[in-house]
Length: 486
Image (cartoon, rainbow, N blue to C red):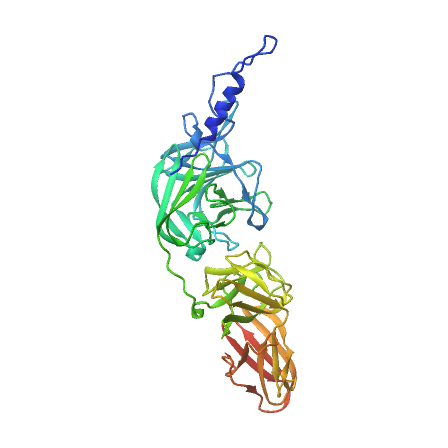
């Protein structure tokens, strides 16, 4: 494990050096007052009745801003520190003296959030005031301590575990074990034999959660990070996803969180990764995103059309809504098998032109509201992924349809979605057989049993000529249709 140089010690040496210089007789001399605490100004979580120590200093800390990015918040401080069981106060040090001693009654807060966001497990909360109740720590352990001057809130959360999360695990937590602890430095965590592939993104989480939400209607609240990103050798709270830069393999992952705010992760290879072979049956692609009917809760499946001249292709019609279901904008991605282990993103225009997307690429900006025909293909067994998106949805085609032709379809009207179901309708004169097809192409067409339509299924038909409204519905997995005389 690395031992990061204590910034405070360096600061003391630099300060001393500034004053230990020779002076001319005419220059004033500065006497250094050796009385008081040898500590920098700031907040410290101190044992009641004892002087604060450097390893429990709260550092300036960022919070979550719009779009999940880290932003500065004036008067917000935090740190991960080792604490022994006992009574504590939050003290403020100025000019080497304790200027205030804060306390407050602690209450337990469950790790839940009414907005549905995933948050960290439970924590304790106190509203701090001068001379308030002492903060009781009931057991030795490693704790997240945060203090916000604006709301005067103190958060105390025991670090139960640290986890590795990202594309290698399908964005599920791989919990790590505590392997060492040092009250003067911090805690080290480790897990072994984790399969990771080059350029797969990852982050670290505390207690299997992304954040602690303390927002309020008055707008004075905040969202504290409980995840790390940025760079492996310089983890920062709320930092961006980190691409894995080493070669494919099995790795031991070691994380150290230090009392001085330093944090980093190391990878040591322990074995070889399983060889990847391309089998299209293992790639059930779906579209998932904040502008979709089910948001990020469920995919809208694409249809695999097969292999032609070495090209594997998936197609489908996706309806994007007017608004996003979260606060991060209208966006979507492709992923396989209802899981985040393999996902594709990047930049995809809505004009039908081809775009090369990347495995674990960025979220794709959703187009204007409406139905879109999407294709995704690979000609080199997954090394390169090509996609198109055009503003055409489902149409009705056939000699017995309103177009009276098997060469040209009439576009259906997308009704949007309710409770995860997208509806497409068309009213016109029907006199015989018809089918549904996507994107003005025969790559994906539907027929067969109206209550369970199938790709390439038999032609549908009406029993008598007349004016009908035909309806096509899609719940993300299954297509059904109905036809009603007008």
